[in-house]
Length: 417
Image 1 (cartoon, rainbow, N blue to C red):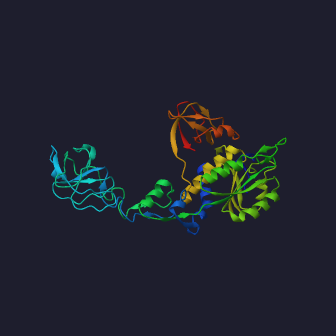
Image 2: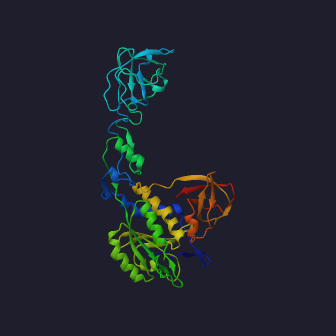
Image 3: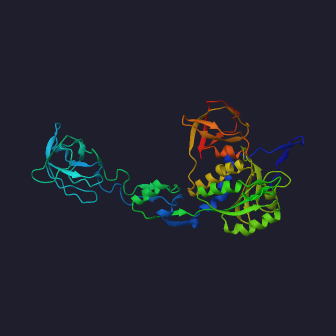
C-alpha cells in the first residue's frame, strides 16, 4: 500500500497527484480481464441471451431477405408491359405470402401480398390503391386491371438487400438486445455463445448502518448503498450475492469475505476506504495486494482496487451517490469493454440550464434531468449524500478535469441513466 504523500526538496510533505479517471478505468479493466476468457462462456438459446455479450463474430448463413419479395399488397408486373400512360393487364393467379410463385407471363399482372415472393419476370409492384379497380380481381380470361407505369425495383425488396449471405451480421463483443437477437432469429440461428454473468459479492460496511425496516436508534442511518448497488448491478446483468452489512470489525469483515467470496467472481464493498481512523475495509485488506488511492473525481474520489485471496476486489466509497458514480464510471464500462455487456451508457450533448462551479483538478459528475428542449437541469448540489436529488435525475452530467466554471447555455456531455 502506498503512502498518500511524498516529500519535496525541502523535506515538506506534498500530496500525490490523484489518479486520472482514464488510468483508473484502465486498471479496473486489467483487474477484470480474466472474466473475459473463453472458459467463462456458455451457449444459450436466444430467449435466454438477452443482455449478454457476444463472444464470436456471427456470419450470416443466409441472405435477408432470402428472396425478392413485395413491399406492398398490389400487383406484380413487368415494367416493359406498361407504357407511360398505363395499360390493362390480364390478372394471373395470386401469390400469397409463403407460397412459391410461378413465372410471370407477358401482359399479365399478379396479385401479390406483402412479403410474398416476386415471380420470375416481374420487376415492380404497383400498390393496390393505384389499380383500377382498386381491389383484387379473380384470375381468368375476363379479368383485367388497369395499372400505371412503374420504374423497375418499385416496392420490391431485393434478396440480400438487408444483409447478404457470408457478411458479418454481428461483431464479437456486441451487446445482445432485442434487435440483435431478432436479427439472429431472422437468420435462422437458434442459439449463441455468450459470456457468463459475473457473480458479485456485495458488502456494505459501517457500524452506523442498519437495514431498512429496523428501528433507527441515535447515530444510525439506513443502508441505501446495498439496495442502490444491488439493483444497479442486477439491471446491468450481474448476479449479486448480498452478504448483509459488515460492522467496523476488520477481522469480522475478513471472515465474511473468506466465507462468501469463494462463490464470487468479484468482491465489491462500500465504505471504509478513506483515510479516517476506522476505515474497516482498509484494515481488513492488510496483507492483501490491494491499493487504496484517490481518483481525480468528485464524488467518488477514494477507491480501493486489488485482489482478496485471489478474487478481484473493488472498494467503493460509502456515500450513496459516490458508490453509484463509482459503479457507472469504472465497473460498468470495464465490463462493457471486456464482455460486451452491460451496454455502455449513451452519451449526448446538452446545454446547462444553470451555471456551475467545479474543482479544477477533478472530473466532476453531477446529477441532472434532461429536458424536452435539450437543456439539462442540475438536480441538487455536488454533495455525495443527496439521494433525493439522485432519484429525481435521469442523467449524469460530466464536467471534465481542468474546467472550473460553466455558465448557463454552455454545452456538456451527459450520460442517460
